[in-house]
Image (cartoon, rainbow, N blue to C red; front, side):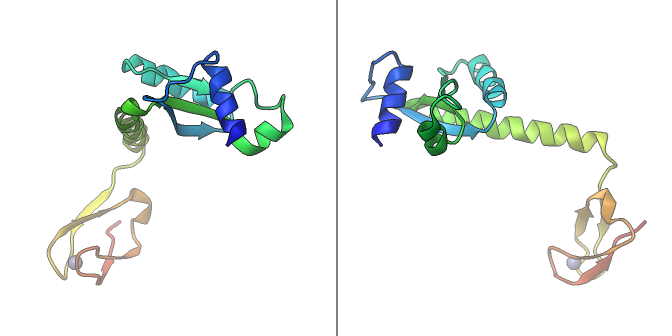
Amino acid sequence: MTVRLRGICDFLGGQIYPMNRLVTIATFDFPSEAHTLKVLLEQHGLEVFLADDNLVGTNWFLSNSVGGAKIQVPESQVEEATKIIAENRQDSRQNLKSSAKPDVEFECEECGKTISFSANRRGGVETCPYCRKYVDVPD
Ligand SMILES: [Zn+2]
């Protein structure tokens, strides 16, 4: 705990914000990934701090205990930051999806609900998420 506090104090140039302390919202093994997220959050007008970035690798006991570069935001902005991260993850998933084959969509023979499976399940046997019966996925 002393180590962690010291890190934050160093990082803020020795200042401590007791009413609006920094919260780590993401940890990265590679500082470059942390930088990418920092830029994204800053684009949304958040106050973002990259902690332990340059401490990793120079201080063996710190890099052991902190586990990489950390993205920190003031406690009051945590909710918004996590929302942005979640939206961003969704976006990249959607981009991935649109470049892949479309999902298979069909009606369950048992319950009549429209169900869908990813394209790589074509021609296989799956379980209907609604009625739990086995269904044949069309080719
Ligand atoms: Zn069904």
